Every structure is written in structure tokens, then in C-alpha cells.
Image (cartoon, rainbow, N blue to C red; front, top):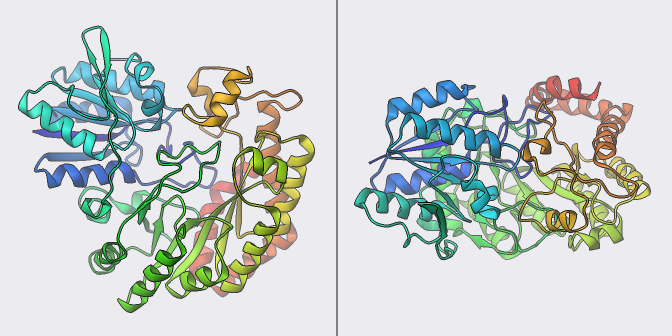
Length: 474
């Protein structure tokens, strides 16, 4: 049985796997890591699998459909996102028309939140709700055996004019069962097609855990309020594989929602990395409640940079989004990160619930005070399935149900939430102004030049990202 897994074409360099899918201002293009994990599961089951990242290969819709037709698959699994969902449904329909016998399945956070609406968008046979590695595995087995689909947990499917929701699927508890995603990258992808502005090129993305113990109201993560780690032995074995079999990799990004979520595990993992001779640099996502002992351990094990969601320093705003952090925690974290010698990519969201024009100014000034290595300023993006989306819809703040409007025509972040005294267009403009204020400071520019002179590899990264980014600052 042949299976095609597809990151479908859309805008050039559109990062569908990002938590806020868009065309980034820095040129970043995420690896399709969740699709890639699924490739490993399906190949382990003996299926003939092809993974096509049409965005990375800069393929048009017509080229993608022709490729699908040439493969003649029995099952096509298409990754999706809210801003691209209409495009993705159109791609799915075109493939179904070209390969009528193929079962067309869509995966991702959007079909998870709106399965019936998604199926109704085109010639789509089914969607997966939630974690889909084993749902697609069971779907493939059912199709191959000619069985009914009503036993596939986590699946919603079309049967005649009805849409049937099967029972939910339990999350995978033993993540060590999953094949190394790095093996899938080596076989199916060219890692040089991908770029992450904060990291040393070329890099790859892996997970040491799925989920986050926290539950921020705006977050589009599929595994909020949960946490499932791989064993530290399993993680280090994959790092050994990468170090030996993929020597071209210069840095690894742990795309865990919060890499140092559990201090004891983090310390043990870092110690085992050192003991087993892992020399590759790595970066991760972290929270500001990470203490100095943990930061020191991460640095000694090769950590280079952390992506951190500060969001806002305002206590009222932080409480309204359930962030469970404070301004003092943020300041202490930045001091500790500097003392540990770790770089920080700081993320800030403008327009959060309880935000005002005054608190937004406070956020921008605070970002300059923190002075992380890089800073990202996002307008509030509300995605189906999140608390903020529900709140905006209930209060009548959502300006459109056209998901393509979640982005500008160029694919940049847009805001479709208009609150009294603070509309979406204002928030996009305020984010643009925040970037200019942050990045065009003489102090910041001087620090980047000094960083590049001290470390030439950092200079290459800065120039590559900056060439794209500074065009957006004008």
C-alpha cells in the first residue's frame, strides 16, 4: 500500500508547522516534524511511504497534483493550518480528482478543532483529531484490509452525506516507541531546504517530549496542559545517531513546548549528554521559571539559545492569559541567562486580553530593558480551539470567519480581532513599530556587530536572517 504524506504548496516559505503559521520576516522555514514522526511510524508498520514538502521544494499546486498522480497513492495525508485551510482543502480536492481511488485525510490543529467544517470544505474523506501518528497508522491498516473506518479512534470521516466522529484517541504514553525523526529527515528530506533564523545553519528539529504543563489562553499547541517525555536514554541515543550519521548538522532545535519543564529530568538529561560525548550545539523553548542551576547545566551540555515567551510584563495581562509568570521572574531569568552565557530569543504578544495601549507601550519598553539577543512581536492571533478564539467570538470581536485573513496577502501575521479602542490593524502597526524601536537602537546594532566579530559563525547567521528581516523594518 502506497501512502503520500504532504506539506501542501501555499505561499513561498510558508511555515505551516509554526505555532503561528505564516511567512516569517526572518526567512525561517520550519521542518515538517510532526509529519516526519508519522513517516517513521508508518514505515515501521511496513508501508511504502513518500514524504513531500512542496513548500520547501517551491512546488506549485499543479506540480504537486502531478506528483501525486505519478505516485498513485492509496492514502494521502495532508498537513494543514488555520490560515492556509482553504488552500489546503483545494489542494486536497485537486488530488482527489486526479487520483479518485485515493483516500484523502487532513491533519493538524485546525481539523482537530473543526472536523466537520474542515471535511465540508472539499473532496476530503476524513480528518484526524488530536495526535495523529497512530490514528493514521490504524486508518492505513483499515483501508488496506478493506475494513470499516468506525473503529479508528481519533478519526472523523464522511460516510455518504453524514460525518461520523469516532471515539477520541488516547495520547501516546510511551514516546520511546516512535522511530527517531532524524532518521526520517536523513532518508526523505534535504535539511538544507530549511532555515531557522535563531539557529546555526544547517539545523534540524526534534522533540524530547510532547506537551506543556501550562495552558496559556492564546497558545495553539496541540498538547497543552499535558506533558509526556521520552526517556533520557532514548533522547541521547538519537543525539548520538545525529552526531555520527548526520555530521553536516550544526545545531539541534528541541521544539518541545518547554524543554526544561521538569528540573530533575533536565539535569539528568544534560549530565548524560556530557557523559556520552554529545558535542553538537542545541537550542530549545523555555519558560522564565527556569532557575540558574538548570540554565548552567544546559549551557554545560551544549545549549546555545532559548526561545522564551515573555508575552507581557503587566500583571493584569499575564493573569488574564493564565501565564503564571511575573515581571520579577522575567527580569531574574534574563539576568540568570546572561550569567549562564545563554542567548535568548524573546517573544512578546500585543493585544492580549486586558491589554491596553498603555500596557502595550509598557511591553515594548520592557522588551528593550530585557534586551534579549532577538525579539519577536506578534499581534494577537486567535485560532479555533483556543480560549482566546472562543472569547473573541463570544464578545463579537472577531472581524471575519475567512481564515485566509489571518495573514496579510504577503503571508505575514494579521490580526482579526477588533476590541473597543484597539483594533486589529492598530495591533499590526504597533508590532511593526515595536520591531523598529527594538532593532534600530544603536546599542542593539553595536552589540550584534560585537557578537559577530567575536564569533564568525554568529555573524553568518545574523547576516542571513538580517538580509530578509531588515527589508520588513523599512
